[in-house]
Image 1 (cartoon, rainbow, N blue to C red):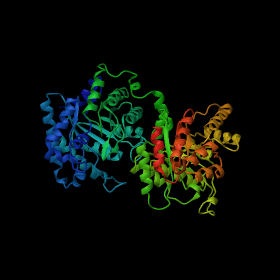
Image 2: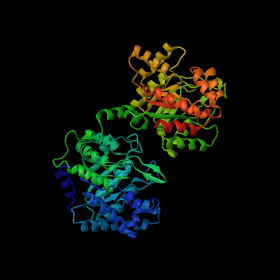
Image 3: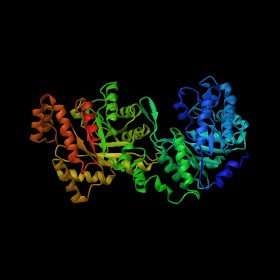
Image 4: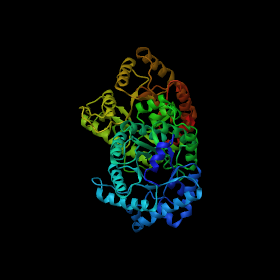
Length: 620
């Protein structure tokens, strides 16, 4: 094949060329361990690899990628195979070639090259020249074995990918596809935006530039359009994962089904992609669905194909809400959301907390709210707890962020830290005064009230600026909530406070515990009479009653909570079954609040996460 044949096919085809899907996913499904060296299978189990190639060809792929993603000297050295770079890469090409020949189909073989698995300077000890030599070694083996093009994929470091492109240009005249991977906030792991990636890769000499891996098709589509805007003359590729992976019963599962991929194949086409395919989690069934969808448009993509993938109003809502937050996405999709509060541990051990979070997640909780030093008592940092829950349990979190005890410098530094940890949901609150806690003499000053902090986040940080108007490098994507008391002593003052928070840009509201849904609805109507309907999502506070003593304490000593005599009598009559009667009362309240609440804010009492899980499960 001539070096230009691949590009000629791109130009001549009315629809994008279709690559294959995930090699690793398919090999693992056939028994290969993720800890093993998949590239070595070209030598040790060639029939296994050939079977995957064959299935993708039969599914309609125009291009199959060699099983050489990690066949560079650095990754192979982890298996003691650094001396077999050329042998493994040649075997991968020869194997793919034999399968193509046996299929009697005109399918191209792409040499698959992934990142080195080591950090380049200045973030690592490998110099750019060393990286280029390693890529050149692998690419030279692929080219000499007879691949039709080179695909550089799943790179998170733009410098590393640029070195790989240079190595390809140095070693061969084949066409080069250069593809980056992005994190949940639509940035590379080192913080580069889609626009910057597109401009750098377009100038690097790559023939096709694009995005792969990352999240599911919706994120890839969004990034692809940004790249097209930044580099309108570039040829583009899109190869998404089958959604964000989840661990289920010890297995890695991907949620996006084949039909969904078929719809997005058309959306990618309309967005300008000339090469499409799949990455982690995609199977021959996904590729077959994409083939069917693309073949339905013999004249190429229509102008409104993207409407098949996501309604414009939903996309706009996601962009405004902060696409990295699953909570924001669920609210944008109109789902009833269940949020559960958890307090950080008082000591070093987080085992009980994580066990409780796992139970709640399994029951169907959408997000865990992590309090910050409730009752002004010393506890583990909620930043750490949010990070632990996110990484070990895999559920979305909301960070409680008190303004009390923080000056303006501390507030902004803490916001940057939260965003760096992947926290996107922030609940802004004044915080409990230190006078009631373990350290009554601790500093209790603050520079911002909650409405001021909301304004700082929404009107500065989310625009890429700090309080002084200085550029912070890139916009944050915080989704900001605030507190609401639906049974205040001074209704007019609470309504004024609420309006200040709404004007500052709040995204959602968490209420105090509600025991009188009718009074709560009356409060919301009074707000609507003065300022118009409240169009922010309201999470109604739900606090399950536990015992007679608990109930009387709440009724008599906690401001803003009034529990009817009939409810108190139910708890008294329940006796030892009072905790379960409290669950039943909570569920009744939830049903009464659904006409005006977009979700609930559940506050488990006394660490009884089993009772909370009952409520969560019933709300589902």
